Image 1 (cartoon, rainbow, N blue to C red):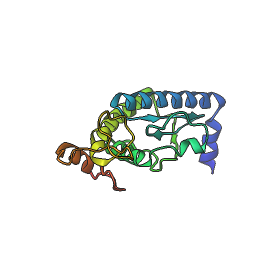
Image 2: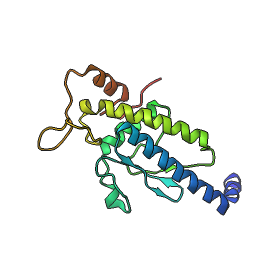
Image 3: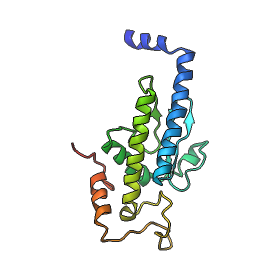
Image 4: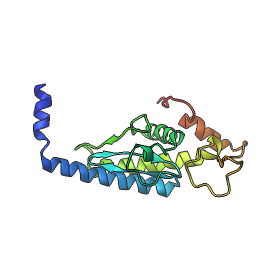
Length: 173
């Protein structure tokens, strides 16, 4: 009520311009971090909101039909990996990331570093988990084009357990 109205009074056009700039910056750093790790995702920006579309069909998103191309299992894996890195994102693949005034350049850089580690972990676990969201040369088989990994890949199996792939749970700790 009074506190909410006072907060709204602080949201001037200049503040929204700053928030939009931070959203674009976050989008670019997330895109670069994921790309460097080999995780295919796009991060569309609308005003002060950042979306995420995972998978080989990520591309440009201009409407809900475009957004539905996201690889939901890829998003779930990235979400769990980011959570393990201490970054809480929206749990649903079709939700937005909200950028606030507390997201300084230092905070955004820390999020980007966490995204690189998380995306790297997802990519490392992908052959074991069967995710299709990355460009994984020479690892596709079958008519469905799904990724296949070596059953004896203990490191990937450990990463999969650590990330909770296939499970809707956060890592304790």
